[in-house]
Image (tube, rainbow, N blue to C red; front, side):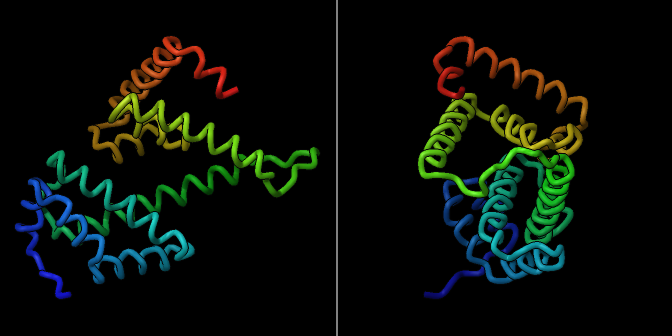
Amino acid sequence: MKTTAYSDEVLLNMLKTNERDQALTYIYTQKEWRSNVANLIRNNGSDLSIFEDHYSDTLIIFERNIRLNRYEGKSSLKTYFVSISKYLLITKTRQLQRIELKAEPTDKAIPNYLTPEMQFILSEEKNLIYEILDGMGEPYKSVLLLWGLSYSMKEIAKVIGLENAGKAKRLAYRCRQKLREVIRKNPNLLKKLR
């Protein structure tokens, strides 16, 4: 099966029309784009096991930025994609370093495994949280997820595409207010999470 090569102009147009899925499939399977992102991961000292998830996350942000007209055309689409990937990788690495620094040793003996029951409970709680966030819609879901990962307001502003950290802070406040409202309207949700 031969893959058609698309120019940036055609690909950009496809991403903004009903040919979006075809364009995303094309980008997802582009060897050169994938190779550039894999090299970026390797050069960052990260394990290539994160490649598929990282590439998918990059593609999601890339598509959203195109859809919201955040791409200014100052570089090729591939360069823009790789720059999003680089920023995302740096941000994730920084977040992992923060989490490692915040982790404090405890005297309690904590098993380094999860029983099947614990795994089931955690997956149910995680699914419930994502269900709540999905119900809130964008940008609330993205802001709360990033805030939950300890992103700074400046980082959230950059990822979401806001002008500055102040606007991200106001949006995060509105997101938390909306989350409180959702929980207030559905008190059973809080009981399920405890």
